[in-house]
Every structure is written in structure tokens, then in C-alpha cells.
Image (tube, rainbow, N blue to C red; front, side, top):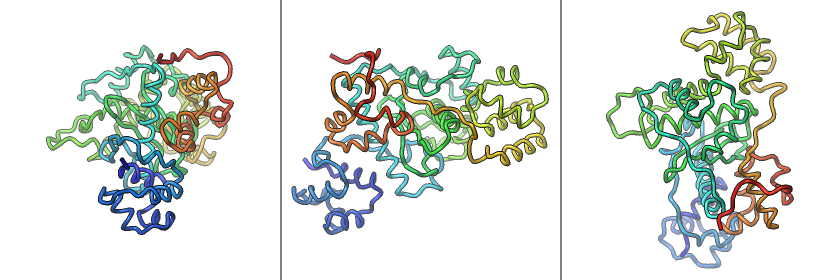
Length: 375
């Protein structure tokens, strides 16, 4: 049967209104509205026009429906700065990402999720330390956060939204944890975004209220978005830059040059490290020192970017998947065809987590990976 939900998903993914899609497809806006509401029977000729206008295979609109993501369960950083089109396009990308990982589940033995529940009364800093201890990380810097998240069963995908308003988001779906990262930012800031979303998964799982909240109403993790965003930032800072290690490595007198040199150890932005040392319970910087360092970092271009930044982290799991596909003379188009998706949508989900060279048809050549295929 024709899926009205899939028509709506594809339209939102293309950031089109019902009127805009109607113009592109050469049909009436009423037709689009009635099809999306399930009030009209889908005529094959109309479906073909819609598929061509949206750039989706016709078969996509006849696939089984899946659970739709809503803004209430997704950790968008700031809904106020995001347009409805940007939000809906990102949610649609999330739904497609869940489908792609469902395909992977059917073909590979993926790592099991290792993200235990923590006492909701824990502070973000204590929760970050508890997770580090659970994962056996101690206080050492994390050499590759993306690799770590994938190894712990967190499903990471990319976004190619070309906007700073949708930088990253995360959500839980049927007991599985998902993180989506935008390649719009520097490598250092993308790492912090990944840790920030890990914080949401740990602190605000399944509709829990912000840490320490006394709210007794129906729980909504994003009812007070400012609180949960601050908490996720605190978690990320503590997870990436453990206070014990930072105090051990930094000198007593800290300057902008010290921050720029030291940030490479923890693979974070200069501004993030400066903020971290200033906001310890026993700060290493006075307010005047912190402001002076921020001004100096801004003059050197560290407020808007990371001069001489690190190499962007890339997905180990997806390199294995592509290698396995290539060894069987297949590529991303095989996944797209199985799911009746445009291959560009699958490629988009790897943007920012896999170099362009690894997303070509010849990607993943070489030795067989450790990822096991489901027989």
C-alpha cells in the first residue's frame, strides 16, 4: 500500500511545503495534503510524478511505515534558532538513519550497546566520571571518541545540512542510542558535540527531567532546554577533560599560548579548554584571566574556528562495512537499493564521519575486516 507517512518524510527531507511539492510535481496542493492525510487513493501516475520531483525511487513510497521521530524525543540544541524546515529535514534524516542501521542489523553483528543507567541524582560531572570508569578509561585523554562510541554500541551517523542551526542531535529508539553529527564545524568542536550528545543519552534518557529537577509534571527532557543543554555541556567537558588530568598537565600560570598548546592533548577547542579550567569548582583562572585569554584567542581566530586544527575523526565501523561490501563487489548503492532510497541519502548519512574518498565505489578495499557478517 502507498505510505502517506513516507511521502511526508521525503517532502520534509527536501525542505518542501505541500504547495512547493505540488508545483514541482505538477499536481494540486490539495492532492498532496489529502495523500499525506491518507484521504486519497494514490494513483500510480501521481506517485511517479512525486517520486521524480522528490528524487526518491517509486518503491520508497510503498515500503512499510516505521515509527516517526518527533521534536519531543530528539535533543535538538536550540529549537528557537531552527526553522521548521530545518527541524523537519533533520528529523527525516534521523528516520532514514534508523532504517539504514536496521539494514546493518540484518547483515552484520554490530557491537552491543554498553551504556548503563546511572542514578539521576548524579551531577553531570559525576556521571561523566562514572561512565569513564565503567568503560575503563581512567583519566587519560580519549584518542578517538567516534571509534569509542561505535565500539560501545552507539550508532553514529552524519548530517550534511549546511547550516549551523542543526549541528548535532541524539535520541533513543527501541532501546538503541543514536547520535547524528554535522560536518559544518571544526573537528575539535565536532568531538565536543559528540560528547555533548553522549551526555544527553546518559542524563536525559527516555524523557527524564533535567538533573536535580523537582518538576512533578509529565516528564519532558526538553521542557527546559537551557538546563539540559548546560548539563550536556558540563558532562562533555568533564568526559573529555577530566579535572585530575587537566590539573596535572597545566602549569600554575596559564596563558593563551598554554591553552593553544595544551588543547591538542584532549583534542578540544581552545575556547572549550579555557572555559573548563575557569569553571572547575576550584577555578584555575580568575574571571579577569579568563576574559583576557578569551579576547586573545578571539584575536587569533579561535572563536570562530581552530587554526591548525586536528584531523577529523572517521568511523571505524563504516569503514568495515564498506570493506565487506566491496569484497562482495557491492557498495552503498546496494544498501540504498535494498531500502528503496536515493543513494545520495545514504551517502549523506556518512558525511562528516567518513572521508569522501571512503564513500566512493572503490572504498574499503584491502584486508577483510573484523566485523562479522550474519549468516
